[in-house]
Structure formats: C-alpha cells, structure tokens
Image (tube, rainbow, N blue to C red; front, side, top):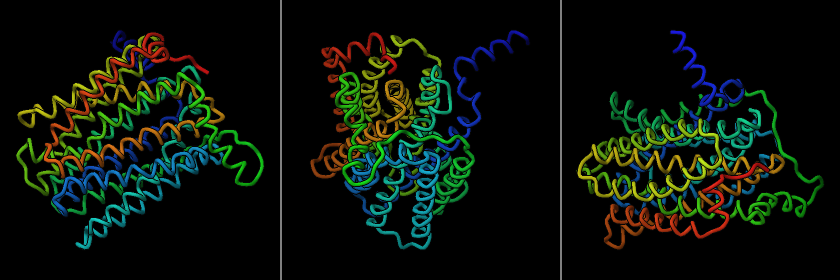
Amino acid sequence: MANLAQLGKRVSAQYLASFQNPGYAKMWFASLSASSSAWALIVARGALILELTGSPAWIGYVTFAAMIPSVMVSPIAGYLADRYDRRTVMAWSFAVNLAQIMVLAFLVANGSVQPWHLVVLAVVNGTARSVQTPSSQALLVNMVPREQITNAVSLFQVTFQGARFTGPVLILAVLWFTDKPEWPFYLCAALYVVGLGLALSVRRASRGVVEAGRGMRVIMRNMVAGLGFMYHHPMVLSLVLLVVAHCGMTMSFESLLPVISQERLGVESGAGVLSRFSLLMVGYGVGAIVAALYLAGVKAGGSRGRLLLWSGILSGLAPAGLAFSPNLMWAVLATAGMGFSQGGFMTLSAAMMQTIAPDEIRGRMMGVYNWHILGFMASFNMVNGTLVDFTGLSAAVVLAAGGIGFVAVAVMSLGGVHIRQIYSQGVPAT
C-alpha cells in the first residue's frame, strides 16, 4: 500500500501538478463545462440542420457561421483580455452563450426553428467563444508558477479536446431518456450555467499591459501588438503557419461527419445521424484526452518537438482510416486515432505558443493565434461541405484528401530552419 501511495504521489506530481493551485482547478472545470456545451451544440446543431435541409452544404454554412467570427473578433478579444480583468471578460462571454442557447432551445421546442435561425445564433455563439478563449488562455497561466506552464496548458487542453468526448456522450445520455429534439439544447444551457458559476468564483485578478492614452490610433496600436510580435518572430510565425495548415486540412471535419454517418454507417436522418455523429465524436474525445494527459508529463523540449512532428503525420493518416472504415466499430477507432494525434498536435503547439508569449501581450497574442486557426477551420468546413454537395465527391474522399495533403505539408516542413529547430529542441521561453 505504501508503494502504491508513493506511486500515486509521483504520478500526481508529474501529470497533475497544476491542480495544486485552487484557482487553476476552478478555471479547468469552468472551461470543461463550457467546452462540453460547445461540442454538444456542434453535434446537436449539425444533426438538426441536416434534418431541416437535407443538405451537407448547410452544415458547412452553419459551421462557418460559428467559426468565422474569430476572424473579426479574435484580435479585439485579445485586446479586451489584456485591457480588462480577464475573469470579467470570460464570465460575460459565458453569459452571452447561455442566452443564445436558451433562445435556440425555445425555437426548437415550439417547432418554429428555421435554418437562418441556426446561422444567426451560430454567429452569436462563435463571437462569444472568440471572446472567451483568449481571456481564459491568458488567465490560466497566471494561476501557476512559470515552470508549470507546459503542464497547465496540456491539462487545460483536456478541457478543449476532451470536451469532444464529454459533450457528445452527454447527448447520448439525453437521447437514452428522451427523443424530444429540444433536450440536447437544454443540456448545452445547463453546462454553461455550471461554467458561469465556476468562472464567477475565480478570485485571481489578471490583465495584461496596454499603452496608455485615448483615441483610435492608440487603440489600434494596442490591438496589433500581438500580430506584430507574431509576424516578426520567425519561430512563432513558422509554428503558426504549420498549425494553420493542420487545422484547415485535418480538423475541418464537422461538416463531413454527419454526412459520413449517412454514407458509411447506414443511417438516414434525425436521431440516427445524431447518435452516430455523437459516437464518432466520443471516440475522438477519448483519444484527445489520452494525448493531453500523456503530454502533461512530458517536460523535455526535444521530446515535445519530436512528438509534434509525429503527431502531425498521424493527424493526416488517421482521417483516411475513418474515411474508409467498413463499420461503426472501425469508424469509432479511427476517430479515436484522430483525437489522439490531432489533439496531441494542438496541445503541443498551444503549449509552445504560451511558453514563448510575453505575459504583457499574452491575451492579444492568443487572440491572433485563434484568429488564424479558427478562420481557416471555418473556411475549410464551408469548402468541404460545398464540395460534397455540388461536385459529387463523397465526404470520405474529401476527408481523406485533406489528411494526406497535410502529411505532405508535414514532410515538407522539415525543410524550414525554424521548424526543424522546434522538432529537434522544442521552443525557448521568452
């Protein structure tokens, strides 16, 4: 028993060190609740729009509407995260998302929901999420000592990547008890209530440093500080371009999974699509959780760099496995492989970005980072849905082609000096 206790302490010290800080624990659970709601909403909304329209392109439009606000909002959100108390910004974004989900649940419950409702509310949802993300990312690293930043970011990625498991599995639980279409949306609202309560209980004040003064010129200089740092730091820029390609080519699958559920898994519409889509996302979430927990204990920069390369290559191969899965069991296993590799890649890249970022502009830096990756994910989701709807290509072919394309990008990235340094040594702390 004593040996087991010692082993437990060693494991906790290596993998769960950040949870020793109470504020971090509250942030973690608040983010898990909000992210679980976000992914439950993606699944429920995708199945609903397919039921209403029968069109894969409409899934792409709604997904695009939820993600494209990041292009306009993220730089402003990063400025807000450095200008104002990050706790307050995060709490307000939770409240806005709770309100829009309740409106959607009401429309579904009384049978008056229309496709354009989903598009408009998706824009509100994406805007609030774009404001929430940089404030929570900037706040979390102020909760832990600097030597725990990689551990803190890796564990925090569990809330983003693992929510692809918790959100859909909670939808499956709801479907077990009722087939009323509004109840998945009530679930999403309840999760945001929990997240909002936890966010309001965080006591650690945190904000960045912005240039004093008034006027639009001063505001614009403050807003572009993160963009200037990113574009003038060769290693950061190289990493961001690699992550952008990864997100666009391998992770823009939300508009394709409901269609794959029909094409490959033998379901027609309604609850069948929702349940299959949920199961695929559960598999993805399990793989992402395992990857993030494992990476929380990897401390050597060189090890993290090599894992970034190999997880990137596997990120491209795994979608091909899903695209040509012969049955549901193999499809879920393939999505678990996607979750492990893609979640691992995003966890490593986010930890590297947080390690490099100066705290004075951390909010703006992460806002610009999110602007790049979410903008490309939004665009590629719309492109993927449109390709399936108007060209005759199957969702499986589109998914596999994107993945194989990124394998080629990952191999070619070895020719870049800064990316090779990341792969071999990791990134230096600024």
